[in-house]
Amino acid sequence: MSAKLKEFFQRWIINTVAVLVASYVVSSGIHYEKPLDLVVASLVLGLLNAFLRPLLMVLSLSLVIFTLGLFTFVINAVLLWCVGWLLQPNFRVDSFSDAFLGALVITLVSVVLNILTGTGNTRVQVRRNKHRPPADKPDGGGGPVIDV
Image: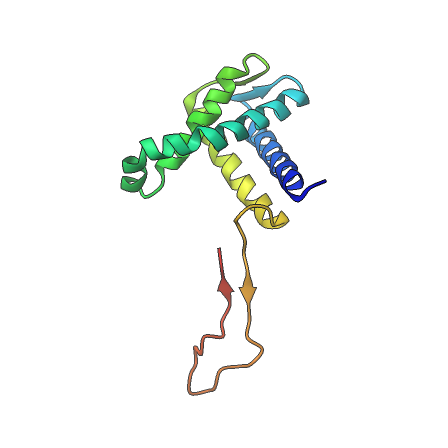
């Protein structure tokens, strides 16, 4: 299996787990019939994120900048709501507020799983110097570093 195909399957699995967690957290607003419906929904969400999300980001760039990036959550909610609309009745999202909360959960779970698996561009790296800084330089630059 090629590295690109393996990375695709890892991202798809992470996305599926994130949508599953979101359906449990927002159980009153995100519904699916069978596990296969959940897998298909995560694939469609991934495709929309790959092709439609960049266009929406460019079109709403002024709002994204004005809200310091928070409008990105609205874009994510719109995409999740579109997935629910496209895959009805097997996968559905009842309202925009449910889509917004679901998009928040999907984002958080995806970031955590990407950090744990090392997939994607998200990483946390903690470095410590083996040598202590001299006593006359208390900070010395040897403290923990988190590179995100």
